[in-house]
Length: 549
Image (cartoon, rainbow, N blue to C red; front, side):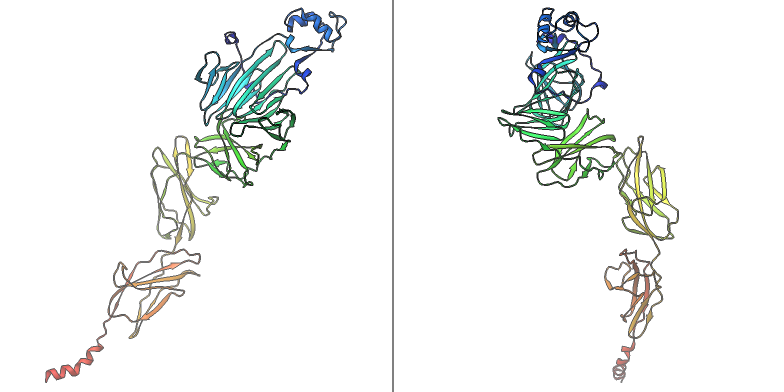
């Protein structure tokens, strides 16, 4: 274990793509390197460049039936068992780490926290924590995305000198991983991942693999290329677009077609609230979605990775900025299908102010200026107010930026009708999201009340007519506060009649109701005086006469 520490390892990050290499089912092909002879090649310079020593020249000559080891026809293919080729331990590097992960060092048997950029060597075991992902890069350009709560041991890492061939064998004890393997250039190349339930071998493949302790099973989902999946006695070759489930000590299930990429057109492009939330089409019972979010299109720096078995998807609380979202459907076997991917933007800060005035649905008299008031947001430098004719704010009538206070009086005279207003807070990064649009109306004052018609028996109250279709709400009380109503009447006509009340001072007020149900404010109350009726005193005259006698 001491010697492996001395091997250097140079990675160019841009050269890596997430991939894995296919291991041929043929044992001979898997163990042999096939070399194509070029001009001036012979077995002796081949041995110097690639073999363990020159003594293997005779073995190669005999194995390939070569008559003259010094003179070989260009284009001839020579088969060489890979155990005859010089090899050295390979390394892998942590290209990206989101969250936390630990490594169990085989040499020291010590558990320590991993960092991005660290080397991982033979017999090391990697463990990712909850809500954490890790990307491993290999010398041939292959990559593995190890997902949360996973445990992966590096069983074998070997490169064959001067051949471009390699032999990588990993053991996924538990958890889940996504792999993309760089296509191999020869036969003596292996990329194999074992789990407690299965062994997968690949060449130039994009696939996903899980190891589940709970039910002693593994799931293999092939997105590109082909994967050999070995169970208890039998192996299956799983093509792209299919997956399989393997239970420990059993053979793999027949290939199952993966679900297609889901429709994500309904997902917003811009999220103005966090944690993000959106709705996906409902799936059948037992099915769900996997949601992944990353900063880059290749998803090397995963920020969120969770399955959901509800159509309502609840995501993370992320900082403002651009992200890549990836969604795939999960079937009843828990096999995950093809990805749908799109760019999303989070613009949730500064938080939208609360709208204070006008109140929702408030009526603003036509002749009055409109005063807008909203809550002050800490950290906000200015505000942005918009008024529109429609709820979608596509018909803007007023758009004022760089407002320094949390209030503004708008002197623009708006015609009668409905309007919507909203406000966004502005900081040094620019506008935050707008508040939800809030409706108000420009209205006429309540119709003026006419002089009442008072007769011996009745009281008739009339007003001027309102707008077509409006109805009327009259109230009458004997005090200006209208605390105790004597009349509370809704009519279709601009007036009503009641029996004449007792003499005294009364107060009347009126408001209109629009055909769509909008209730306008009461107009200014009007006082009326009902004369006292003294005719009852005439009945007392005979009594007064008797008293006078």
